[in-house]
Amino acid sequence: MAGFHGKIFNTKVGGKVLVRSALQADASQILGVAKSVIEEEVYQLTSAAEFKMTIEDEEKWIRSHLENPQHLLLVAILNDQIVGMLDFSNGRRQRIAHTGEFGMSVAKEFREKGIGSCLLSALLEWANSTKTIEKINLSVHSNNERAIALYRKMGFEIEGVRKKDLKYPNGEYIDTVIMGRLL
Image 1 (cartoon, helix red, strand yellow):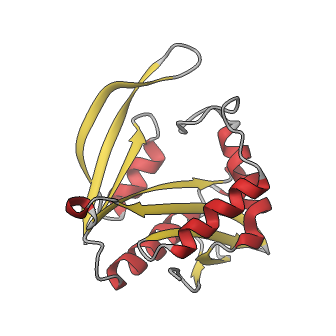
Image 2 (cartoon, one colour):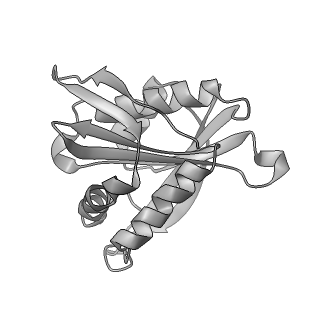
């Protein structure tokens, strides 16, 4: 079973957050965070209308991460509440198995507190402990300046831009910024 057994991190505002691998028992809270972030209709690929995950789907997704030693699903817990999550999966083909990509979400009311930094720190610690992962990649909306600043702070570099890659419901086009970090 893959996983990150848990570590306490200090937040920017003096609190303590536990980051650990998600458990199937976390499905309801993870689903709640996912729905709240997706309903903002910004910075996510999935629209609120498209998001149809059930608790059972969420449990299956969590289990798939726990069963694959090169996948990771982290949760950030503050005051017994899941406030953020990060999922990482490596490439399925041999030539890209040494790389992987992650997505991260933090509930709106808990942003700017260092939760994202805690989740990324845990991912990097875990990835450095594996024998397989050598590079971590991500895609981010070009208008998500806070996320891009965080990724740069954590050692990720911009590797490319896909122009007008995303189209928001209001008709606005957004570029996708491709970033990566070698371990």
